[in-house]
Length: 466
Image (cartoon, rainbow, N blue to C red; front, side, top):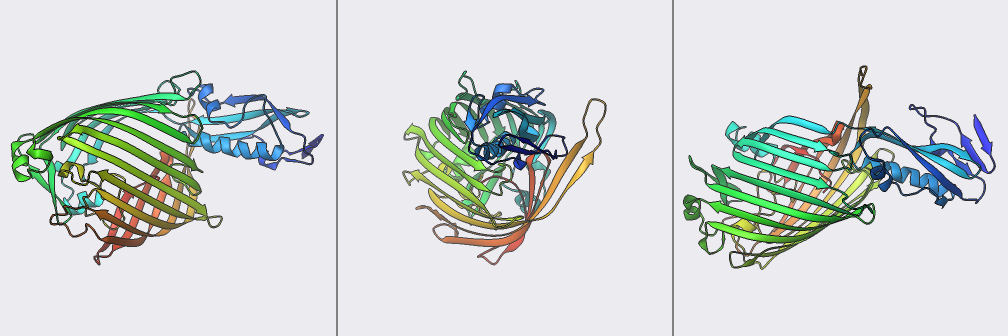
């Protein structure tokens, strides 16, 4: 039943959680409403100030009702994008004339995951399953500790210890805010390890590996960075790192140009700056909004290592209907000077810089760009209910299926292409597939891709924004 209070009309129609949905509010006048109090419930671990930092309004501020309701949705979206909560509800709690109280109700996730570690080392699952015949010798195994929201400040602790293809120990800690104004943060990381097998060259756009009874590679990396987040959607990173890489005499003989000047060891510092911008409805699987990433780095300052790198990526998502959306992605990277050793030439096919349909190939170079387009439509959405207990509430695990068609184009420049046929030419691919999105932001992608070489196949991927 509607309740009339002055020029404010509230339609009392609670959702399944029993909280009144503020989207039913509307105003017949232009009198602004003042936010008197913000009540937060459900945050057993997350500190209140961390939640308030993501909300685009404060106690004492005044808004016209239409603007306030829009900010309710912005607050809900920003809190979900922290990856701290299963659900978030931002709604009107109560009012006294034109003074209103706002309720923010959250349901926290599990934050600590001490789990076994088992992962193929190859660039994607298809390369491991098809080309490497699912060889267990190309698997890392061990244990990892993932501790999100460790102190309730949206900080992340990572400890990895594994053996197998790579013997490695690594540690990282990322804290979003370290100052009272909640603008500056910090991150530290450390990794050390050894390999008895490594890729030392690229021939016909395939990685060439050497396996030995002795270790053929040793590495050490240390990094620290400061982060700055003045606004909600943009984060800046300023970092410094140190890296040491050592290869065996055998690797050096097979590829004297692996490092510059026929070296078998390099030690170099790195200075870098990175900016990320997210204005997405939901970062783990966006269907609307924009994101961008820009990076600048300088590795080394002498003849053993000297590379300046500039990279940029962007993605835009537009809704085309209630259940469909269109995605456009673009990216580019350049390394200067163009004359670089093999160690600095990894480009297409490594990390997030890739084209669908070329999963079995790598393209080395010093400059590259790509353009990706995708049309997606939601096919099915449902929840699986997990019963609760005396100390644990019942949960609903959401599962959503999306169908899609996609097309890609890209180009890699390399003044020293060697015996590789995909360098210095336009590359094209396309296909269709299904994305399955479920609990804890896990997305599985099943794609049937076609490339300009006349090849096609089913490929498996995990999700990323870019």
